Length: 452
Image (cartoon, rainbow, N blue to C red; front, side, top):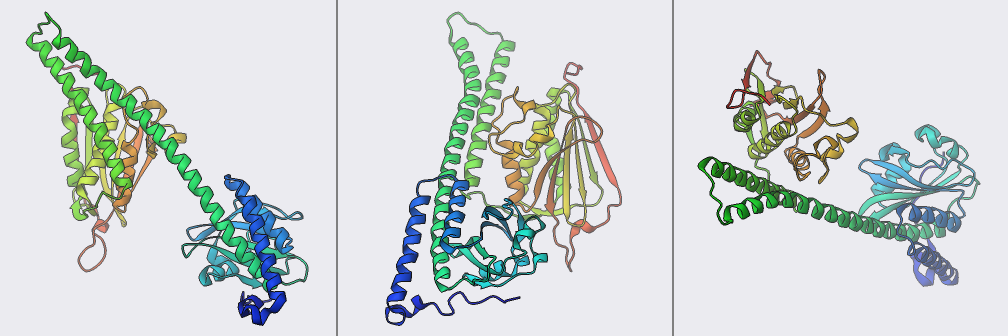
């Protein structure tokens, strides 16, 4: 196997006009023409897949390569986005670790083009292995933006004709233009997404504001009407309704402000060591008055020993309040809500489950997106921001929030996980064995003794 070679071992262009002479100028002009042709072609498209296709086709033609692939970087991995190979498989979406491919790893670390001979096929993903079995020469160029590797272009030849220094210079130009074109497409796509999200945002806000404002305006109009005299009971009902709708408006505005502050990075996390049982029990107490109005049964199950975690107590309380309120809001008859606190080696956990209509499996990730609501919740008011905010707050506290379904019946099962607090002398407090548990239940009938 031929090892990697330096990209500029004998590049006449690097020697300047005197070292390269007329031939050097000719090569430079040819490379520039190739770059201009590519830039003009890419400038007519704002579709990501189309831009990738044009890049690999131009690169293959300019380098007289048998196979050209363009890959994007996704963390520690790279993903095939486009392939030009008339005689081999053009499989898109193949994913592999950068460090598992020596040429790509070297190009990434050195931030420069790498040339090499045949490579061991056992390192190549099985989906495209056959396309590389007869390759004799490779050239891998990183796509660089602001000093970071965002992708790669790899050219291959199956004939015994190594890539020369002019090919290296050509790939450098192609890679630079491709990077800018793909960034331009990404900015365009982001702008479209932002516009669509703004439209969805305005639609949600207008809809959610209209309902409580209509109710408030209606009651005010009634109370201001001539000859209207309300007894004490009617006045109390009107004032309670106005207060409830005002709270609804305040909640919507609070959610909107919280989402905006999170987007701008304006939500600091005040992490402290706290017993997760305490946060859960306080949330249980706060939910009791509303649960009583709904005739709900609320159960809390906590261990006897502390479950110490590190988090922002106010933010975690907001998450739990949101989940409990959702369970009450979207409940069917006789709401049933269970809160369970537990721990393991990695940290503390709160499970909140209910016996409501649940959320279909196909929607369980989407409901965490902003302005998205599950199909089973559309008959009730809501901004579609609560679960989005809850998950983001969990992540900012180095935790997670996931949604599943109950094993023993319909309903939702939310799991909030948080990191354990460190113990003195090492280890974590949540690794302490649980010696027992205590369970409390509130069966909350309506004031008149009936249930919903």
